[in-house]
Image (cartoon, rainbow, N blue to C red; front, side, top):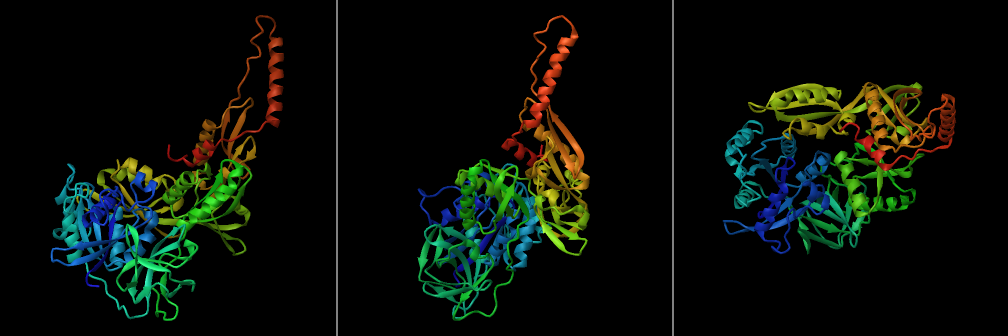
Amino acid sequence: MKQIRNFSIIAHIDHGKSTLSDRLIQATGIISERDFQNQMLDTMDIERERGITIKSQTVCLPYTAKDGRTYFLNLIDTPGHVDFTYEVSRALASCEGALLLIDASQGVEAQTLANLYLAMEHNLEIIPVVNKIDLPSADVEWTKNQIEEDLGLDPEAAILTSAKEGLGIEDVLEGIVKYLPSPSGDPEAPLQALIYDSHYDPFRGTIVHIRIFQGKIKSGDTISFMSNNATYRVEEVGIFQIHRIPQKTLSAGQVGYIIAGIKTVSDTRCGDTITLKNRPCDTSMPGFKEAKPVVFSSIYPVASDGYEELAAALEKLKLNDASLIYEKDTSTALGFGFRCGFLGLLHLEVVQERLEREYDLSLILTAPTVRYRFIMEDGSTSIINNPALYPDPERIEQTQEPFIRASIITPDRYMGAIMKLCLDRRGINTNYQYRTHNRLEMVFELPLAEVIYDFYDTLKSITQGYGSFDYDLIDYRETDLVKMDILINGERVDALSQLVHRDRSVERARLACEKLREEIPRQMFKIAIQGAIGSKIIARKTISPFRKDVTAKCYGGDITRKRKLLEKQKKGKKRMKMIGKVMIPQAAFLSVLRTNTD
């Protein structure tokens, strides 16, 4: 146990976490140069393209230190986005230490701070690592000052490295061995193991990733999950070295996997505790909670006959993503589909891309919404995330919406632009403070519904990429909510309905009507696009019809002949409008999602 080190790398997005992991893997030689590829621990195409980690991975790195001993360094990789904070916290709970990676050109950012606090909550030993020192814009002394002033860590203990160039990698490995503590635990005590992740293998079922705190586990043992009392018989245990390496036993302090014929990933909940059925431990590991979706959207196939394929694809995707929840939904405009819950907007985009790429589906998504709470006149409470289920306004006593606490770190020259952005989104500025002489941390309380559309993109635009953003949910607060409907030629299109704040309803309706006017093709009759709250029309755009010049053959002569032809055309257009049907293209539904961004 003295020669085991369990550690994580935590960083803000794009500070070089995946690249540093690659260099550590290469330095310890667990994979040949022929089999190596960049972003080794990022297995999905989307992760490689976007440069983010979505699904965390684990790898055991054997390293012979300068003292001549061989150490086993268990790198538990973590997702880098705010949507996956709970998974990050469970991965950190499995470690004794963490490398806090900071970009020498960007400095300390919002998620650097958030991840540091998360690591401190778990009493981890933290080693600051300054990355990208080879860049022309790198300022190592400035970054060290931030480490001291913002983070309260010793700047002299910071390890300087360039993961891209391979500089300082040996120092990082020696620092892990020297400064991070070895795990503690009694191999003879009752088994106590934390599930920090899991993934699905089509041949073996669910592969459960565990960190053992007490006791030991081997194939043939009967285990029990403490959250739901499910029992399974262990078929195989082992460690990760890019590929799975089976072992005879795993004991206290080790990180590895178990295979026990578990059919679905949702049975293995992240943060749950595993123990032996015939010799259980006294207490479960603290911090376990159910993954709760924050953003909701309905997914429909473009062609109505694609429903069965979508159902099968969601079922398979659920095997690899336990935090995705879905239920059947229906729409008069789009037919049958599914109402899905996501951890955040990035999670929604990832699920949509995976469905389209891996299962070759064409999809339509409705506008994302959050969970609203309605207190009715009879005292009952209902929680609704679907505009189609909006209750009768006459019966609503009070409406509440979720609020978040957003932390934004930015150079102070962008303070005015960020203030305007947040106040336009109904934000409340609680405080701001200078982190260094020119870097500011601003804290706002914002409605979640105003953030899920395009807040992050707009923030990056107005701060020229220097602003960083992190948030956590705080509570529900009273709001003035209305249901905004879109009518096409007087017919309500339920898939375009949105729940919006009354003050933003007119602006949102105008934008939606404008976008739809651009996307819906012209017909031989006039098309009216209207935004409405109840029976009150609050916005309108009209698509002009195609018009044949029926008076072209008339030259000279009396005006009554021309007028007679125009009247005949007008009657025909009116009759056509009564029987004509407007087909709304897929692009029109997608354009309404982007009403705020353009």
